[in-house]
Image (cartoon, rainbow, N blue to C red; front, side, top):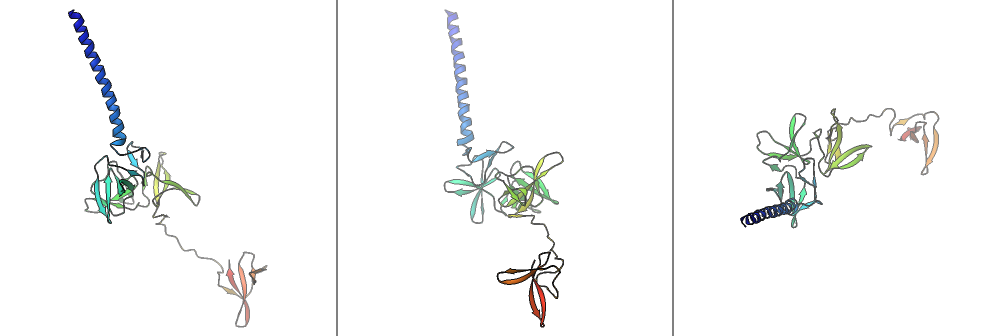
Length: 259
């Protein structure tokens, strides 16, 4: 009789342990689902994963709530909400991910930022936003993308554009171009900003050689042909320069009117 009672107690304990373990597993599954979606206010439609397996919001998308601490930064009459390296603006009952305006300041750089250089000056990059720390300053200011700076990955939302048969990536007026390094890594160099390519390039003025429009000559070149355009007679030279007859001091001459 005593043996039967001990066996019954042992089976009861085993069943209780198994039941608790199953409940714990079900509870962990529910917690993970809540943690990944409801508590964080994120959805697969609005957010994507980057190379570091952390959430990275696409600009223009909205969230319902914040999963991590946020700071409200008033700037230009707008209250920007800063959280985990990204900026948001209130939009109805939601918050919309936006690019921060140039000139806004933060006290601490976001975790995972990169230090990059454009010339001798260091900049700090995170998620498509560039920061710079002024001399003797304790905070960091959002600045324009520095020309010549290179980053190892494109910001979320950058799109391919083709200009003069060259491929670029563009996001919010900033242009990037692929740069393949010696170790076969692909980096992306800032080659334009504010919607313009090569803004730091100085273009030398083009000096035309030979006769220019407006010049008057005494004699037509050899082998000119006569054409009539809109009722006017012109002489066209073999190199496609257009002349028309003019009189100057009672002398017939020829004026260049097109090339």
